[in-house]
Amino acid sequence: MLLLAVPILGAAFFLHRTLGADACLPLYKERIIDPAGLVFYIEETDCDTIAKEIYAEISVSKLDEEKRTLLFRYDPELRFRPTIKVLNKKLIVISVERVSSVFYQASRWHGMAILRTFAMGPFDRGATRHFAAVSSGSV
Image 1 (tube, helix red, strand yellow):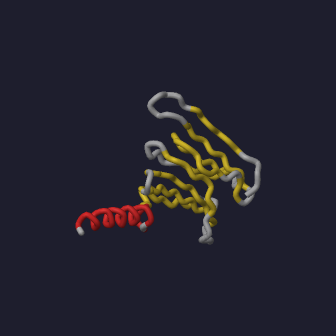
Image 2 (tube, helix red, strand yellow; image 1 turned 120 degrees about the vertical axis):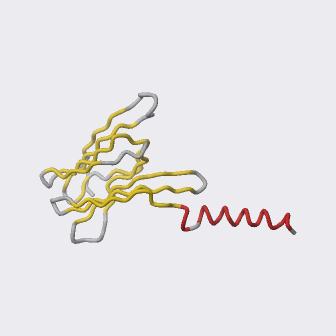
Image 3 (cartoon, helix red, strand yellow; image 1 turned 60 degrees about the vertical axis):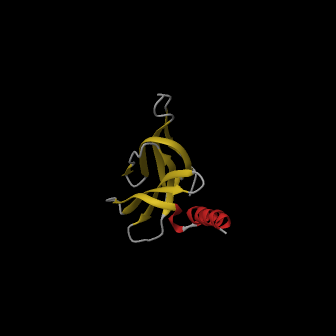
């Protein structure tokens, strides 16, 4: 009986950890209100399912709206905090010192172009590529 209970309990624990509500935990949240009337949300999440995944998301909304739009989702390297600026109500600048990988990048939001600047590459080897991109597509 004990030999049967141990694998069942192990499988139940595995399913709970991979499918349960505690599989992803927020690590960091910040809300930035810009003088232009925009609210930026920076969130880091740690998902500990089958493989460990940490990702950061930057989203935006207008001050009087609840609906957020995702602007940038990436794998942060060493938890560098991004900086966000709005220039002339025409350009949103998102700067992150170092990024391991990029999952999503919006190019425009409500007529404003989005400029992303970040370094990407192995932190310890010095093989870093720097990126600065403005896209002209529409969102």
